[in-house]
Amino acid sequence: MTTESPRWFTSSHSGNGGQCMEVAVNLAAAHGTVPVRDSKHPDGPVLPLAARAFVAFVGSVKDGDLGAR
Image (tube, rainbow, N blue to C red; front, side, top):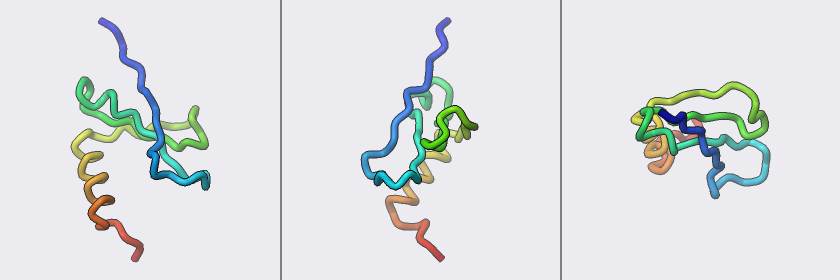
């Protein structure tokens, strides 16, 4: 059995303002999680999100449901 390593990427929609997150969606199918981390601290903590929760989050962002209050 081999252990799959996360392949981190930042969205092409991210500006270069230093407030980016990186995700590793390559683990979603095999592990059911999408790891998320702060791009400024790649050796820092990783938040493993359930794949379904990540999909719902991305959908809410695309739909504009997470606007400022």
